[in-house]
Length: 366
Image (cartoon, rainbow, N blue to C red; front, top):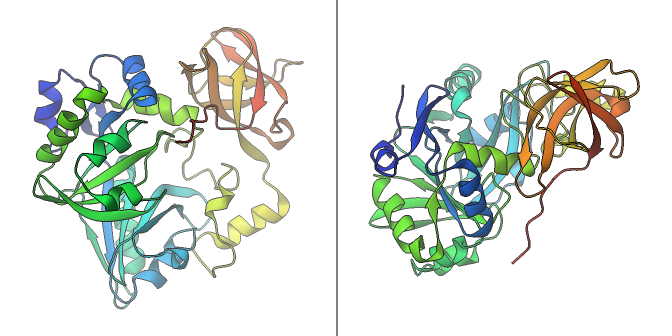
C-alpha cells in the first residue's frame, strides 16, 4: 500500500492503520468517538496527504478549467477556493473537488479524492491534450496535506505570529512559512468546524509536530479517518463512492449550487440542464431515525406504509452529538421533502425515520 510522508508519526502515536483507497491510513489513534469529540470541542489534526493535488497553469488554464469543472472558476479571486465537480458527458460525477486559485495570474491547484486521483489526472491530460498554453502536473507526492480542525484552531495557529492567517475568511488562503517549510494555508476543511488546511511544500513532519506541540495545552490530538467520516456526515457532506459516483449527477445529489449554467459550456452541461428542466427522478435526502438503530451504507429505505423498498442508504452512522441514527440516501423525488416519513430496514426491522434538511449539526459561530 501507499504511505504518506507522515507514516512514522502515525505509528509513533499508536495509530490503527487500514487500507483506504490503496493507502495505509490511520482510521483512529485512541478511539473514533474520542477523536470526534476532540474536533468538536478543541481541535484535531488530520493527515489527508492521500488526497490528490493537481496543478493546472498557463495562459489556457482558466478556459480549460471552465470546460472541465461545473462551477465558475472565473469568479475566483486570487488566493480563494471553491467547491466544484468534474462530470462526464452524461452529467455523472467523476469527482467532487476543491479548486484553489493561487497568487499567479494563471495558477490553480485542484484537490481531488484519493480514490480518483489517477482517474482525474488521466481525464485532465486527455481533455487538455490539445489545449494551448495549459500545463497539468500531478504534485501529490511533492505537496503534503494536513488539516487542523476545531474551535481551538485559531488560538493554535495564532502562536505562529502570522496576522495573515488570523485574517483569513472562509475559503481564503495565504502562503506562510512554518518551521522553515513553505505552506499554502487555506480556511477550508470537511468537518464543519473552524479550521485550516495546510498544503506543505516540503517535509511535512516539522509542520505536523509543530501543530501538535503548540496545541498540546489546548488539547489538540491527532485524529483519524473514522472521526473525519462522522464529522462530515453530521454536516451532510458527500463521500465519493458512497453518496456520489459517475451514475449520480449534481442535481440528484443536491449540489446544484456548485453548477454554473451561466458561465458557458462545460462537459456534462447539456445533460445536467435537461435534468434540471425536467426535474430529477430521484434525490439525495438526509434523515434521522425515530427509533433506536444505526443505518449503514447499502441498507434499504422503505415506504413506511407498505414497507416496500424505495431507495438505499448511501451513508449512515450514530451521531454522537444527537445520540440518534442519521444518514443520507437516494429516494424517488416524491419522498424527498423535509418532514416526509420513511423507514429504514435495519437487519430485518423497519425503523421509522423522517427526512430532514441538512446539516444535522451547526457549530456555534465565534
